Image 1 (tube, helix red, strand yellow):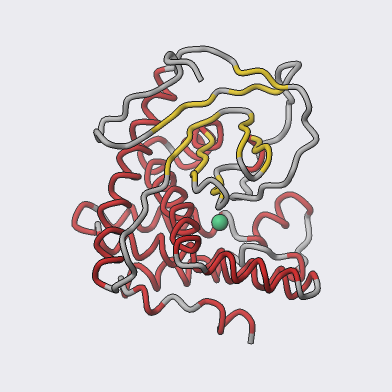
Image 2 (cartoon, protein in one colour):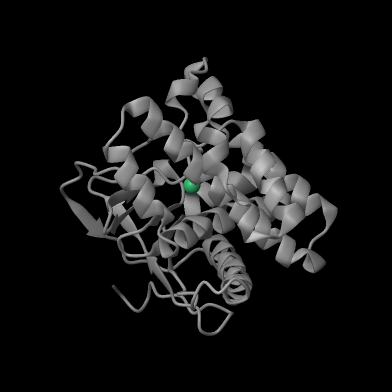
Length: 270
Ligand SMILES: [Zn+2]
């Protein structure tokens, strides 16, 4: 990793490493699908690290994400303490474009941002964020980015609390349809945790921020995505929940601010 690629974040202690990997052969020309955090082993064999300075826009998005990360740390330290959950272990955030090598396999831009439980890093895709900004506008786009960041941190919380491990074990013992339901419950809980975070920082928010987060949550619902990319909706293939479910759980987290209210599993599985 080059020192050129490392970015000092405004927040001080935040460890941010920028990795700029590009698939061998340059642009893949792939469509960026707004599918959050799906990571699979990729067959990419040859990669090289591209050494370059961040563009002004990437730096701006990176600084913003670093601020959000610092906010999530304040909130989760507090929530863990209040609920006797031990000491909150902070995740590391890695910004990338195109592709990135992780303990969970190779992450590609087309997947959007994701969390890898094996290395406890949050991988943030700068291309995806630029797309969000284009879709929502720069100002509104920022809270959409904040929501996505808080959602990924939600997966980190699930890893620290052992929920993710339990779900993976259950998924290995069941059929695909049930495994997908478990995945939906896990994703909705990450949305709930994002809402909980928004509750704790609400004095810094305006009503529009929450509307943007809700509209982002709605835009990344499985039904919305399937409709957009496949032209039809197949509930058995849902892995993240419908737009309505995602909005419901984000809102519930935002309204209650109480980690005890986030049992998405009994609701989705019954
Ligand atoms: Zn997720």
